[in-house]
Length: 345
Image: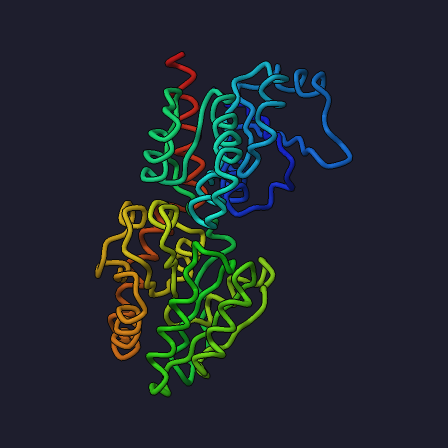
C-alpha cells in the first residue's frame, strides 16, 4: 500500500521538524509526497487544495501553522493531520508571561486542534499536557523529532586548548541562558573552561547585560550561525548545554539542540525534566541537573576533568539517537501510525 501525502502550509518546509520528516519520507518506496506551499502572494484556492487532496490519503499541515489549519481543513477532501510542535498559549502566556493574550492564544490553539482529524506531538509529556488541557478525543500520537543524520554527525576536530562548553539556540525564556551566564561566573577562576553561546533573540540584551554586570570574561557570545554551518559549530564544543527555563514548556519538550548534540556525539548537560527522561537516562547517556547555576557549574567542572566519562556519555547518546531516532525511523513511525489509522477507520 502506497501512502499518498500532501503537505500544505505557509512555510518553506525548511524548519528542522519538517526537514527530518520529509527527508525520511522521500527515501521510502511506500510513500509519495507532494508539497503545496502557501505564500503571502499565493494562497491556493479551495478548488486547488480540494483537487489535490482528493488524490491523496492525508493532507499534512506542518509545524507552527496553526492559522492555516481551518482553511486547509475546509478545503480538503482528505483527512487532515496537524503537527503543531508548539502551543501558542504555552509559548506566549506560560513561557513569555504575556498573560493579557491568554484568551486569544487559547482560542488559537483550540481552533487549530479542533479542525484537524489527527494530531501529532513531539513528546508524550507534551501530548498529555495539551490533550488534557484541550480535552482532545481525536486520534493523536507522540512522534519524537529525532535528527537528520546526513545534516548532523561527528567531525574530528583538533583538540581545544580549553574545555569549550557550548550552547546554541534562540535567546528566549525557554532556554534559561541567564543560568548559563551565572554558572560561567561561578567558574570564573577555572582558566581551562571557556563558554561559547551561539544565537540571538528577545532576551539577548538582558543576558549580555547580566554578563557585563557580573564581569564574566569566560563567555564568548557568537551571533547566529547559518543552519548549514551549525553542525561544524557544534563539533567545536567539548560539553553541550541544553535548556534551563522555568516554564512547563521547558519541562515537557525535547529541544532540537539535544538531538543535534547527540548526533554529533557530544556530552550533554541539561535540566532534569519529564520530557528529557522519555528518551534519555541520567549518567548513562546524558547528564541531568537541578535547574540552578550552582549544580550546572559543578557538573561542568566534573565533566571537564573526566574526559573518559564525557566520551562514555557521548558514545552512548550517539548510539541511541543515530540508530533509533534518525530521519528514517521518524518517518517509519509516522507512516506506521497513519496506515494504522486508515485501517481502523
